[in-house]
Amino acid sequence: HHLRPIWDLDCCRFTKRVLTASADASAKLWDCETGECIKTYEHHGPVRGAAWADGSNMFATISDPFVEHNAQISIYDVPENDDPSTYSDSPRVEIELPKIDGKRVNATNIVWLNLNEALFVTFDNGSIRLYDPVTGEELDEFFPHEKKINRVSFNQDKTLFITSSSDFTAKLYDVVDLRHLKTYKTGSPVNDAVISETKDHILLGGGQEAMSVTTTSGKAGKFETRFFHLVYEEEFGTVKGHFGPINALAIDPKGRCYASGAEDGYIRLHHFDKSYLDMKDPVPEGPVDGEEDDTDDEEKEVDSDDESE
Image (cartoon, rainbow, N blue to C red; front, top):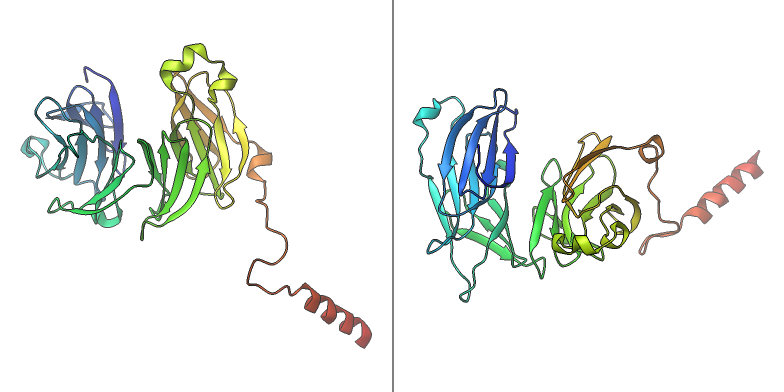
């Protein structure tokens, strides 16, 4: 087992193996069915994240800087059909993340993009970088946020992603051209956000910083899950229950329920009621800019039909 907190985990596609990333400067590979630890991968610093590549034959980790070692991204080969005893202890690719202007920049999340074309990495300075997983070359960098990006999540087919930040906002982006689409504003840090697969809805979780919680009432701390309309950026509902900041959210792919995990030590599983599942999203009234209002034409057609009868 790990000796320090586990910061991230990721299951392979068919839930056979799971990766864990821990503050004890290691990542571990486990058998999902038996719970047996298959292999331990030692790192120079605390391991902040781990992610499987498409195909589940390799994975990547991000680790924090420690003493003279820089933060780094590591890629390991773990072919599913090979004997685990043949797996190498050292990564196939190591990407150093040096200081910027003498200041350390820590990676916060790592995700493989479709077909393993690039590694998508978020940072505590509000930036996102893309890396080539074969050469380790940096492909792109942009700054969606002014403060730390706490979490990033993608829709199921990885065409959209949403970032959650300490700057009180979550932002929706197009994966293909990295175009900013929408911004969802709150009055407290956003720790996680997820995209519903069945409705045009975004779920946001967060709340006041954990160290201020003891002096804050549940209501003032804003520890509820917030529901926003994906297109209109409007908040239309909240779900209360936690008495500490929400750190993690996950939504059922079929849209029937969602789970929230918070600093209060509880994971709450919420089943949506019939009124939410049957709810129709609002449709804007009147013609959109640039479109002609054809209701008059329709009325004329009806009138002429009546006359002909």
